[in-house]
Image 1 (cartoon, rainbow, N blue to C red):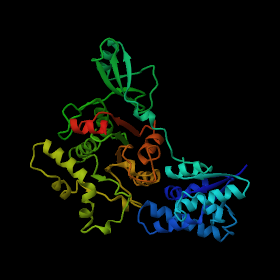
Image 2 (cartoon, rainbow, N blue to C red; image 1 turned 90 degrees about the vertical axis):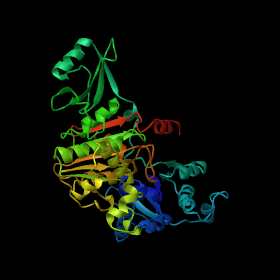
Image 3 (tube, rainbow, N blue to C red; image 1 turned 30 degrees about the horizontal axis):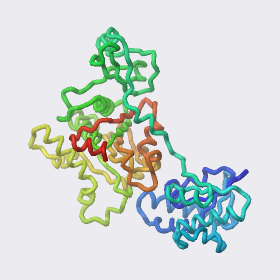
Image 4 (cartoon, one colour; image 1 turned 45 degrees about the horizontal axis):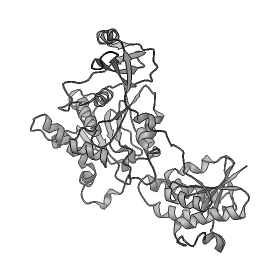
Length: 433
């Protein structure tokens, strides 16, 4: 049987195409949701874009029929805009604030439950609203499109135990075919069964149809040395031109941004494999109008990009040189990009780092990745434990979404950095707090 789904505002702002995900059911949009969407439609960010899309969609739909009665779309779903009806439905509980928008939206679900025969399911990304809905006896669920299981990315490095003879052979031939199955660009550690100190770091290469030894860059990259196994994996992925998309996941202090920038400088300045190092991070909310800040675009971006400047200073300091990152900007080797204006662009032959990617939605990540022109490499860094965007969570953010969708793709690699290296205090703070 069909189901009466009631959508909260945050579902439509997160995914304006959500209305197409309920085949043959009735999708109810409370009129209070329309009012809330109207507040966001002037925003120049992804949320504003989504709000405008929904407004246009409903405006076009009303020309085909009466929205209050319901209008059928191509997948046989009926879209209906609901007005809160009946005193009983508005006073769903004396403990709730009567005119609060969340409660008015809930009241529509309650009215449908009391007055129509179809099962009612309230869909919201707001955890507190799901709690209230459940207490009031209304079936509720999170909007789970693009939701991924992240546990496999946090299990740590895979270990393979072999004989000393095989390890010696690997060092001699630089590659080996194991009986175990690996996906393309999967990193792992091979250890001796008798002495774990005897080991080799490897990556499965689809190009060679075998596992290959990685370069551990013992001499460092622009003065930055890998301090642990995962950082060595990261350098291999960052400096391999055949890998076009790299995702670096890890808690604060694990070196994600530092390693990415150091690798980018090597590839751009020294190797000239790319024309420019392009760095950006979400201005939360993504694309917040920079016009509210004084100065030119570079000055407007400074508060948001200061962590990048800090990493650049650390890298240059480690090289014991009088060169400053300002020189690299003047030479057009590095550019800071506002994600606000990335839609419609084409970005060829650039080493493009997107920092704090966990604050992006899957749709925003798609927008960014589809800007990549010929010869461009994109590096996503972030920590899904530190999400500031209210419309996404640990399982639905853009970083983990990309890691899931590109798992096993020969042009992509993911590395989960486990150990904090910023300082002893930073590492313990991340663990204990």
